[in-house]
Image 1 (cartoon, rainbow, N blue to C red):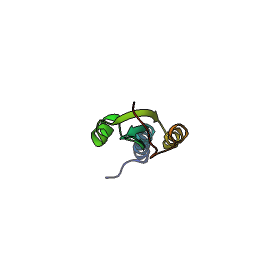
Image 2 (image 1 turned 120 degrees about the horizontal axis):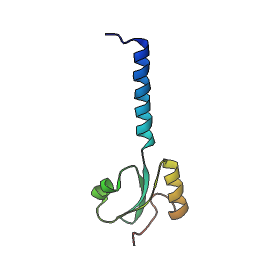
Image 3 (image 1 turned 180 degrees about the vertical axis):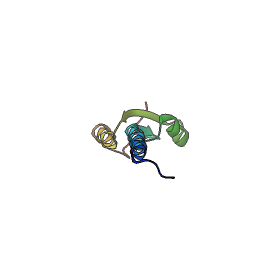
Image 4 (image 1 turned 135 degrees about the horizontal axis):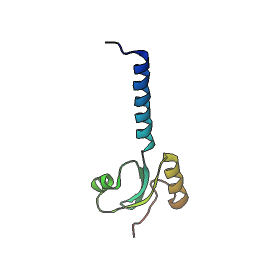
Length: 85
């Protein structure tokens, strides 16, 4: 079955809007996990399951580059030592 051209464009527009919203809502967080800086898109809860109790959230950002810049400027970058105390 073929869709009318205007209906196909409408569906395409909706699909693009959904994809743009999904990618815009990705958060990149800087964590101190087991005494090392990590940058990840997982939530705090997901990271707590993956890394255990030695975890603290240091910042959240809308862009990976912002998270990386924050980690580098304040802690020396991903992999650097840190403490949750």
